[in-house]
Length: 399
Image (cartoon, rainbow, N blue to C red; front, side, top):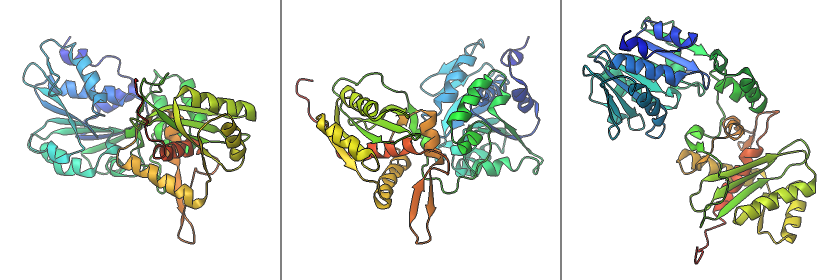
């Protein structure tokens, strides 16, 4: 058995179809957990063990770990490989290699002739990474490329995808998450029930959804955290609470005042007011809270009054078109400039991605979830971000 066959175990039918296609440039739009990374790493290693040069290019250095980890794991199974951790490169017998690169600085991608490139999460890259750096690097060696991503609206990745079937050198493929036989159908149906339709269609059906009007960008770059179970010693916290009645959700979002990172999210509905207030009070007590902003509209003011009577430092926030515009713009700027890190929570991420702006006839903008969907997590996060500037850390002597 050759090395080349031993590194391709258990590829499912969709992965095999892409692998066997002879096209020079292949564009793969697939749902989450379909197996894009596994296929891409397999292809890189298959090229490198033939003595050729391959790159794995990710949108940023941080996201490159998605490919770097399985590349190391697979390469260790092949005798004679050398893994250079500092360089993020694997050398193979015969002179081939796979190197990890990031596309956040396209100029850093220039200057090396290549036989093969995987552009991972290509929908999150700037076109210049391909046109000005990667494409020229493939020219002298007639190199090939595999573009893999979950769609993100109709952008650069969409433009590449449309070349399949038109340009003879290009082939395009689309697979929903359900095409991975190792994913339980119940998991997909749970996501369908939980996520806004537009987000489910994009993330699980791999559809190129028109995202015109979307407010928040770089959401996936920010959604990298897991919830904390307990407060960190010496840290202080603030929160935003979007209070809702009946079928809408009350959401409590907790941010670390010291690091400005999200640490907890509590989302619930259909509870009596005393239970709702107790749940907010419990979060306040648990997280060493030095400030909590609570929306005062509707039932919010009554809740605020009761929490004040319990000795809590509550900052009321009355939502108007003007005040909502202000906190949404501030949160939008935080995402745009990479100032915020949030939990990798599918409901939160889905609400952020589907949250939209609409221009009124008077020239102003309104912000909301699409009709029939929720934005409670978005508003709670916006209130929590607003709270940070009103809850500065207190020096804790002896901490």
